[in-house]
Length: 458
Image (cartoon, rainbow, N blue to C red; front, side):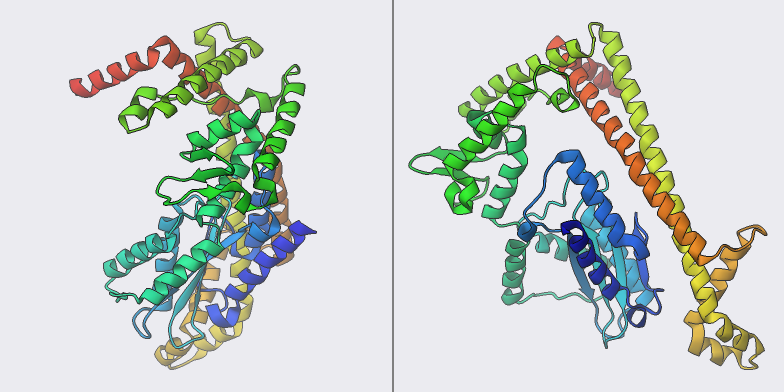
């Protein structure tokens, strides 16, 4: 029920954004790594894959499933088409190209404005969008830079009230100190093997910890400590001890049989670099213990996988990387085909809707005036004809056939993701183990010196 409700929420918002009367029958809708018609379904698929891959989830009341950005312009300052292109560019810069998004430009008001909806889950389905504190300031800066580059006006001196509103939204969507602390605990805790391991991992995340009458945490840049019990009943010291104790028992029970979950090896920390960056003596002690544990885990990984030869380890790491690249390439090819199918379906629908107008345009003796009045419909019709010509004489498929084809591609993509996730985990495990071995044997330093020598020789 929860998944359907979540998907329905996304569907409702995206349907509103793409209303034909607001977007000129969908002509002012663009998207990245998804089809606008099925964006909600694809967003939902990525969230299911995220849970399968990481095992992490948020309570419904705190689960941010999608982000909306609204970009508005002065009346008469920009064309709807340019506004849509600008919205796409803003979305790409703000998400770093790591999240699916849909850009819908509305022309039903006096001012042109664009709705940008982007998926909170990233393209790899292994992380979420990091909505940092004051992210609205980052967004405003990016927007202002784009507007200046296109000769558009900006708000030079935003009112303080707007800033306060932005801060309130940041808190609502999970970037307050308390919410960030909850999210960090929920992310770190599943991998912990006891309460002390949990505290060590929280320090590695940059948190300062105070163990007095109450357990308290302070993030870098935070002025005051946050008492854990203020996060809720599941975050008191007693509750955290119980949660980590349970996980420690589960971990020890699963140590004998080899499982994929137990293959995770973390990179060794470069302690000297961290100390040079200003870390204290407490961190140095923790990092040394951490490195010893990870070195032992690396050795166990090598033994479990029968890797007693360095060349064999290098070969396995290379093979794992090749397997991942192949799986990733197949997924991208499938997504490209899905986009083609969705686009052809749109052309067929547009062709049917604009056929009569285009016939009247051809018969008209005043084509210039007719074109000025029905330019959008004629452009859609001609774009559809061009797409049909590109089929090379093949029959134009039915809309229902394309819908079935898209659904089949989406199902195949979901199946391929299992192979993709497995290949990605293997690649990370083997490459991490190899890097740790290189660091332990001093080979990493030798390789760096060789690289520096090559740069000097050039």
